[in-house]
Length: 145
Length: 335
Ligand code: SF4
Ligand code: SF4
Ligand code: FES
Image 1 (cartoon, chains in turn red, blue):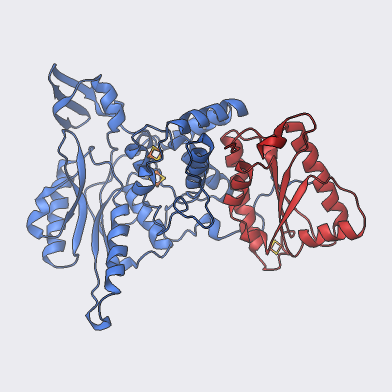
Image 2: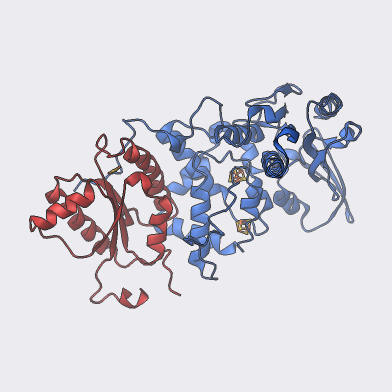
């Protein structure tokens, strides 16, 4: 992944880990409604945000993602009732921790986006892409070998 | 602590003689001056080997867990009617009891499998600070008398205050008395400077992102990935640690710095709500990596966000296995 890291012509690479029931469906809605959003995002679909091991986020940063976004159902709307509540606890700890060790806070983002929020999905992706673009290519934690 | 040591020996002896426990895990004199090492006593006659003072460093909950789980594994090969229970006595000060609470909450064994010999604690000697205080000389003999340490080296005698060589975690310890015990030994130890426990973390938070990153990478670059920290930690007991796991492989094994940084991030993050600040990892680290600065941050955040202190009470629920509907969510991105 190191080869595309040259800053000229550089485009942020964002891994979005999303739950199947809300955000993935929201992304789908954005697609079928022809709402434009930056192509910088790579979606990874998981059953629920409760399924997301915080390791995945750190691993994605190591493997060359310039930013990681996690998105799932709004609180109270999780398909498995409480998956996103547990996830919220993990991620509130993780967000603080990553920034404590010196990784830019905006490299790991968390949000909620429901199946009916195609507009919001596009807005989130735009917003995150812009934030990561401002930060520039990720240099910390990134594996080069 | 002399009284405590005597009483401890008596209680251990009684427990073993009455067959209330199969083994007592405690500390015995180490081979080097002013050191103690874990000991496993199965014979009541050996109880006087037990020592207890500021030279006792390791968190013994680690061994309690190891012995009980090894026994359980071994029993699988025994006919059901011949299976035996094993009861383990543990000499436990505040941090050790907190680790036992965590292991119990995580259902690692039944409460009946352990007998907790609760001891008060005034803090232990940090071997690294001790060596610094010796200024490169070798201790040939040494003793702790109250709050003074007397050491004989080849060059002569040296005396210094115990408080100058206490481990950092002991100086600001909030739980220097057992949080649970079956046998209470000695009087309560006086409180430590617990109000200062997050001072270093607070100061570190004020540094700039780049300064924090520089410190993190500098510390982690010392790490040789011996995994002694993991092996010493009473909360690290997974049969297959993510470090050795290969499908998927979370931690690369190359010499590249990032692999070590990821290892440290993952291990420390595993400690959310589970690190009792016993300092065992710090004390076994051969490279002097400042792990505490990072572990303590997780401790602070768990307190701030979930009002949780690891292993403080049997009634608490581990913070990451529960939630509140109104948990803080100011970190959620809303474009
Ligand atoms: S991480 Fe270190 S200080 Fe925390 S419980 Fe484990 S050994 Fe003790
Ligand atoms: S004990 Fe120290 S050197 Fe060994 S793996 Fe842990 S931090 Fe690294
Ligand atoms: S199913 Fe969407 S967060 Fe649980």
